[in-house]
Length: 206
Image 1 (tube, rainbow, N blue to C red):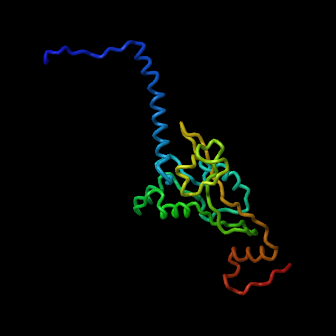
Image 2: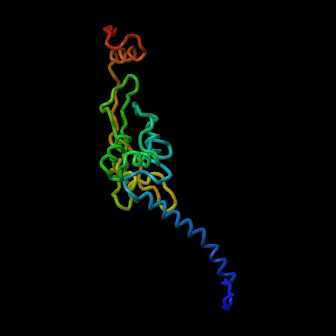
Image 3: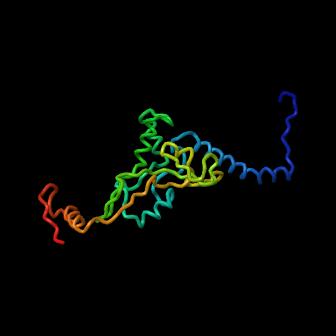
């Protein structure tokens, strides 16, 4: 309308095919880069689609071993879910890397050891941590990753552009042994409520 000719950009069939063919790959690469950046924000396991918990998806090695151990965790599932840290940060005004944030993460990753009936274990607690794989870009194979660093340093469930470079493990595995027969007898009586706590307990008959 201003007197200048209006033109429409023209593309050849070959250039159009090239754009269509490359667009999905470019989008996938961009998506992977964005997710990777989010995972590297800081020592907070947030903004990602998984977490660092004792579940089949996030800790398959641990869950496989726990099927045959002589102990369990009083908490049931131990660790931090993907968005749980975001909730804590907003509620408490924390930032990634804050001492209070790291203390909370450590608390969430602490397991209170419960021996199976008739057994006793050498430790009362253990800690869920990460162990670096050989493919890790910043750590040596076998390096321990404490709870406050799981977010940026432990990819325990891979995604496009970020392969698994870490697995979850217990900082120390409890060693559990069978109680003497008389102690097993008293323990069974206590758990079944045969006599209340603090009541004079009968001597076991061996």
